Image (cartoon, rainbow, N blue to C red; front, side):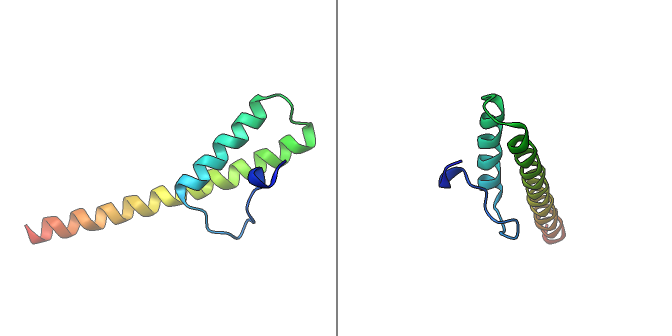
Length: 76
């Protein structure tokens, strides 16, 4: 795995776009069928972390949109 493909540390806050890009890279590596079983396990664990980060980002944006819409309805 090159430095470019190395996953960031788990404690790093990852934005939605970066998480999706990394997920796409993992998917390409898995689909290439060159991934050994040990690496596949690590890739799948990282993919699960990234999916949770994406879900969290989506929940945050949904809450922000809800707040804005509520404020707009109160003002209008």
